[in-house]
Length: 126
Image (cartoon, rainbow, N blue to C red; front, side, top):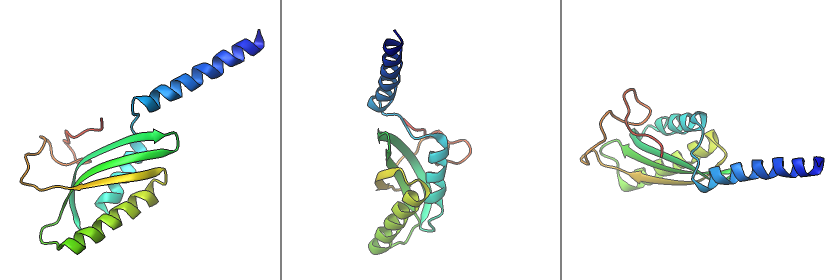
């Protein structure tokens, strides 16, 4: 009887963890905040337009980020800034395994409310 209850408890725990991973659980708010702080620490980044995070395993986080770089940067400067963003994020949140960065233009229509991590922001994690 005791063994059956232990097995049922373990099965419930594993099912709950698997469900969260299967539906694409996002990173916790503390990790998202660290990621945004890391991105905003790069001088070439003018703003972060969107941040999406997802656990792809219990120990690894996928980050998709949409940033606008300051005007006037050359291609090699943008490449260096992207490398700096990746290093900064992985230092701030070691669980981040993969990072996809999209360089955005301010000409594209924005979501109402401004950039991610700013007061009044409408861009949210999905």
